[in-house]
Amino acid sequence: MSDTPPSANTSASQLSQFIERVERLEEEKRALMADIRDIYSEARATGFEPKIMRQIVKMRALDHEVLAEQDILLTTYRAAVGLITKPETEQEL
Image 1 (cartoon, one colour):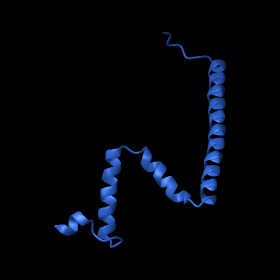
Image 2 (cartoon, rainbow, N blue to C red; image 1 turned 90 degrees about the vertical axis):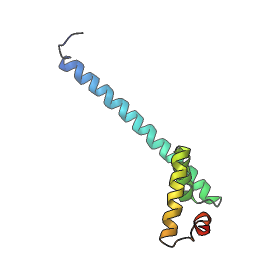
Image 3 (cartoon, rainbow, N blue to C red; image 1 turned 90 degrees about the horizontal axis):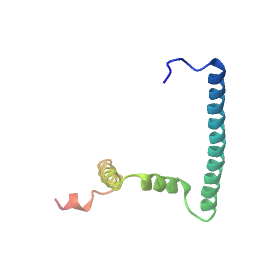
Image 4 (cartoon, rainbow, N blue to C red; image 1 turned 30 degrees about the horizontal axis):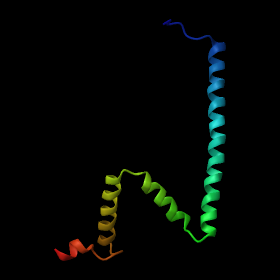
């Protein structure tokens, strides 16, 4: 391989190509985000709660062990601040 840097013309061309690729992907991302918003709007119109659906989508992306750990911690913390009664396993102890 050569240690000589690419010419300014080549660098400018490459930079332009990278930027154009990013711009195309950003446009695709905007279109996908609009599609996702439409789905949540449709779900809301049929009686579902989009905020809860978003939480479920995030939860499904987690590893099952991480999700189980978070669920245990959430239940423990909610009980600690009085949002729910203590879990049955702790009440029996």
